[in-house]
Image 1: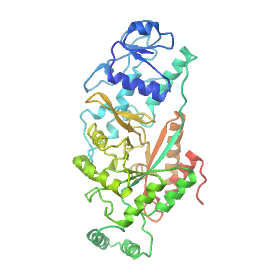
Image 2: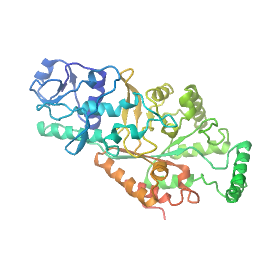
Image 3: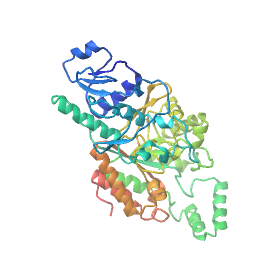
Image 4: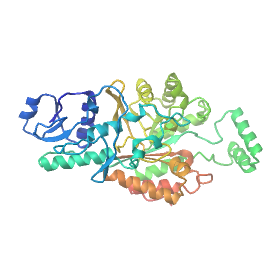
Length: 438
């Protein structure tokens, strides 16, 4: 039983997430002191002052607030773990309000405040509290929960916890289904013109051979993608950009029969989700046409999504998804950095700080992306393998959910991704025990 002098939707949300969802323990929240004092089972008191009964954690007040305000975040270390929202009370089990800190992280509180966006309008990793505290690569919410878990076990040895298991969710983004095929005559002509202006005769010849059916399109890596996941016993999630042509939204022609057959075949071997365009973020009604179009091709409703370029704005992006029936989103990560944007390695419900309520949308944090490793961090394939393994180890240690992001074009061994297939092969081998394809 958890006692709070005053109940709030914020408190209910974060206690449910940490105690029930992460720790696997049943709980009762109450603001009735007599009910708390008469309870004979394990007790936890979350309040400004201690009554002397049960485990006491001093609150800092954030969970009782109803608006979004700039917070003074004093970073320090407790038992080698980063912490903030310190409390100064010897009776408190911990010297910081871990529930407020966890709430701040998973709700992305700092992203509701004013910030200077990057060129895509995204919140920068460099502006985050996680970067300031040097813990972006650490799932601090899981670690704080483990601290609490251990404390409760010592105080109440008979308490029962439900065990979690490590999960690996491989996801593939299809921004450009084909490099040369399934494009309009004008775009094809433009591609030829660009190659001629650059003097790139090799690319010009390659495009011609693909269009004549003499060579395979370099982005057509789907047989390999299906086979490698089949061998690993995994069903990947595919997120396809099903949007009209725009500056940054430039997949193939949406009406192409070859494109439609591809999407249906991938949906048979995995799960197909929508990859909402950048345009849909500026014009919310566009999302409806994108989801409706993909749903019509596949013959079923769409329930999963990942924003193009991981472009998320709080709370608008998520409200737009909820209105269109999306139940699970896989966008919460940084393109520029691997790590834990929300400080957690588990899925969790979206909480809107404006309305102060939990919403029917599960957020699945992204830990690692191919483009991050190659283009932002400039790693070699060998270096990328080592970093990928370290993230797997980190998430396995907290029995969390590891979501990786790869692109169909990243498996092309003849272009700029030459040598990178082995990075993904090693990732699947390391997480699932799959033998590498010889």
